[in-house]
Image 1 (cartoon, rainbow, N blue to C red):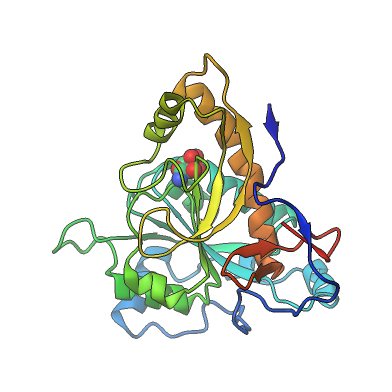
Image 2: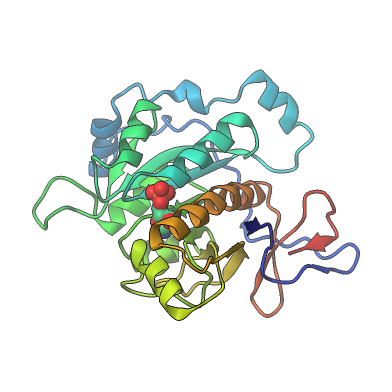
Length: 290
Ligand code: GRF
């Protein structure tokens, strides 16, 4: 039913293309707990995570150390943002644990502290941060500046939005240029923008008569769903689909596509075409981009 098509047509780049990546030179520190708890943000993190934040879970295993000898890049640190069940987050975490993704989810950020994604993070020793503040005067939740501070304290390389329903503040977009990704459950640039989320997207697709839908992964800018498209996957729309049935098939593709894309960013396999379109370098054939 779902075809493994990435919508930008596959093409071959000239041999030995200039090696330019989306990732600014970076050597993240593995020791996430090496900072001292001085500032309000430090205290916030300490309070939320407790003094023994599973430092060991971020330390490289002997196998990782061995493997990393052949790899020119370091294992990446990921912050995932969710508002709901977090099935994409769980798949990404699974990919990290299985070795498919050369990275680790070091922080989970949510605007709904009791959502399924947050529960899963807690039970897997991943610190949970609440953003944005629940109310103006509330002590629950971080301000945009505090959020950026914490992400930097944890040496986060990439921010992955996975069903996070709030607009990302400009402070974060500017602090992480070309380092924030979102997944949308339809083929952008159609069926996106403010108010088009969840089941509303699938209803709009069905009402339009479109014969294909599917997930889009894009970089995040300051608007809803307008950042550069990085990957898409096509899912056929069936004549008598309900929004729920279509949503289920698209979600199944999301899980595969997001893990594949996160693996690519962690291995620094993103290349920016001259006109600003980001491409993924094939793992099997490094001269191929899609
Ligand atoms: C997904 O459909 C995603 O495309 C959208 O929100 C949903 C999140 O689902 N942005 P889950 O929480 O990952 O299960």
